[in-house]
Every structure is written in C-alpha cells, then in structure tokens.
Length: 292
Image 1: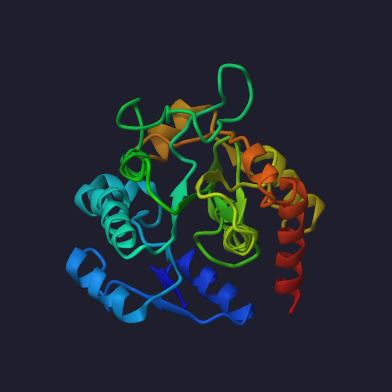
Image 2: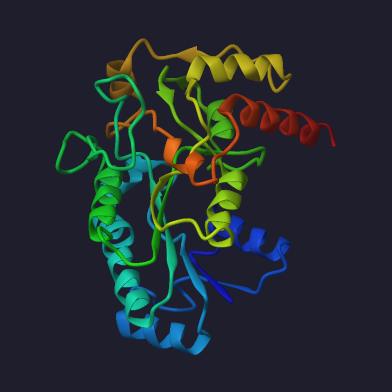
C-alpha cells in the first residue's frame, strides 16, 4: 500500500490518481481524517496501515498565491517546516521510505556561473538569505529539517502547469491576470512530475534531493507568444514595467524567479521532457478541451 498525505490538494490528488492508473493500492488521507501533525497519532495510524511508501503532498501554499502566507505565518511554518520533521521522525522509526514534495522557490535567478541551481546549492531566497517570501523561507527550512534523512526523496516542484482549468495551473494564472511580470523560470508539468517521482520507486533511484522540472526555462513573454501560436487566446497581454512596479501594484511579498539544473534527475533516469514540448502540448489540450 502507498499512503498519500494531503491527497485532496492540487498535487496530492494527482499522485492518488496516478497510483490508481498503475493498479496499485493507494490510500489518500487529509488532516481532517488523520492528524498527521501529531507524532503519536501518525505513528499509530501508519503502523495500522503498514505502507511500503509514504508521499507527503501536504503543506501550506496560500490562496490565491503566496501573498496569503504573509498573513498566516504560523500555519505556513507548521505545514512547510514542522510537518516534514514529524513525518521524518515517524517514518524513520517505522523504517518506511517516503517522499516529500518540496519547492524550487528557495532560489532566485541563476548561479553566478550562469547555469541553473543544483541540488547541493545553498538556497539564496530564504530566511538565511533574505529578502524572500515567508512561503519560500518556510520551504527552505523544511529542507533543512530533512538534511540527512534516511530513505527519503525530496522532490522539488516548480510552478506546476498542465491543461486543467484550475487556478493553481500556471498557464491558467497567466490567462487570468490583468498584467504580467516578465521573468525567466523553471517550471514543472504536473502529471509528468508525478510520474517521474513515482518512477523513483519503480527504478529504485537513490534517495536524496531532485530538481523535478522540465529541462530548460521559459520567459513570460515566450509563454504568451506560444498561447497565440497554439490558438489558446489572441489576448494582448499587458506587462509591468519592471519588478518594482509589480511589487507596488500587485504583490505583497517578493517572488522567486529562478532556473534549476536538472542534470541529476536525467542521470538517475527520471528526467522530464523539454519544457517547450511539454508546455505546447498542454496548450494544445487546452484548446481541444475548450472546443468540446
């Protein structure tokens, strides 16, 4: 049996669905069903289920975006920094391998040598390297809590996208916003992210941190151009003059815009498709979906 914590969320629900397609026994659970923030409660419950693997897709992201985390710092810290430590303690005690959904939003820009950030690089968009959003700071702390964890995968998701008409979908966000910020980013096709994370179990990939993004990067204007080329929209997108104007008019906290290196995942056999291929395919499915 596979256990997915946070199974009702945008990411957790995809894990549950994917395990079902593989014909594997999976049990999705939310905090209202099991208090996995309590060590004795989580330990007793996992003992009763005896899973072969646990996926932690629970956390706090803020709705509609990370600005909300600035007003819910206790919840954000608990979900993103404390909870991973609780799960680590219980899983190591019960000898259960597990995977934690982390974030690439603990970095900003590129490395000084111009390449993307590697798994071993210290976060430069965190409480230890401010300024940062509270969300990013809490996710960086969550990785610190898991340093040296046994039989643990840390999968870094970054700006998830697909064809779904969901407010969490990066492509849908761009279509909904009145004005956009021009920035370069690594992004993750959500279903492919889930598939490659699960392949870590199937291929017995060495546990550790993995940047799970589609190779390459995208600029915001590039994505809006693909929208037009793929027939998603003929909308004339408006852009902020710069990040300063964006912060003044549309945001309460700084945003992480960064590029991650995916060499480690590729060498491990869990590399994803090039970003343009994955993104254009999602756009094509958006068009087909709208036509139905």
